[in-house]
Length: 136
Image (cartoon, rainbow, N blue to C red; front, side, top):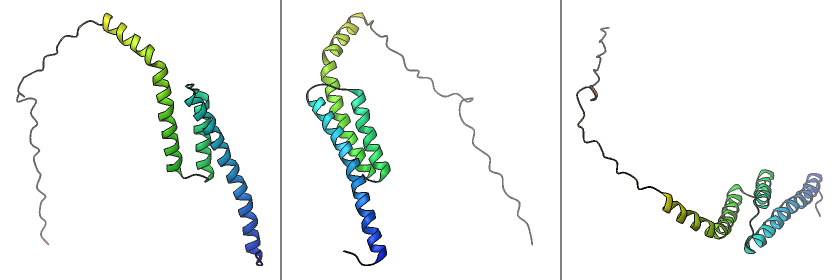
């Protein structure tokens, strides 16, 4: 137990800060777990994803997490979310691709111009102006 008054105050502050940090951490951990469970079940909820990202940003703002740690976590969550979105939309996308190939007209080839640059399109060299020398 500290004896000095400032050390006593510091220990009280540490207890309060630790409690606040634990609350913030438990919030984003819980939201992340819920989101992961939904993703592994094959469901994707945009609102749930936004809540998780928001809680991570709040933790960074409060100084509980480093911004690179939060960015890494957000990136991994986004990757998981994209895999679920892709797998659920795979059948729809394949049907759209097949339909678009049937209705798409063949594209015409575009000719590239082989003109040489003329005198009016060439850049003229810039004339250098010489500074007058002054005699002292």
